[in-house]
Image (cartoon, rainbow, N blue to C red; front, side, top):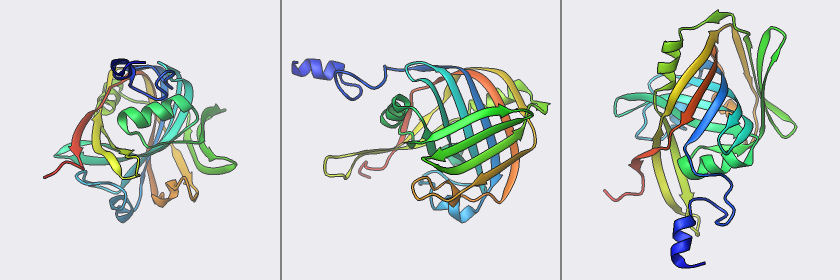
Length: 247
């Protein structure tokens, strides 16, 4: 393989058999359970990197079913998103993500910098309750429940909320384990169709785990919960801050 061939083919690893295809990535019937809760402000400030700013002690715990996604297939994801501002723009900082499929773990980390780790999340309907769980091995670290489709929400308002930006801290190490890339990345969800959205009573329980420390942002009060069914495209990101750039 010639030098030019390497450059022309290189976008993911392994070179001759990438873990995922090139984007963009379309998701059909993507289903969210998002439970918003109040936590401790000091705990948030300890994990959110500058120049992002935390304005209130709020966390969104998400369970997401993705049965049909380009290149990534059928998988489930769970994690925590923290409302932040960046230069006055409101958005969400993706703090932690746990999922059960290799391709989106590799693609999410390599392309955008999603903080993805392997685990076993699940989302299902049990009689009159929407249930989200997150297991790491044999240990249950999160359980979220919501009354199933109690009250319909305004679909335009939900779509606008999904169109707000999200932020990621992308880190790629050098061969000596120093950071070769350390960037703040912004991305958007695009081509959104919200097929349904509901709210209802909810509860969330987080348990301590050494390698999945979701409970370090403790639940002080559950504020709200939404259940969303949508089609969307995961937009490719843009670098908005380079931590390694010389001043």
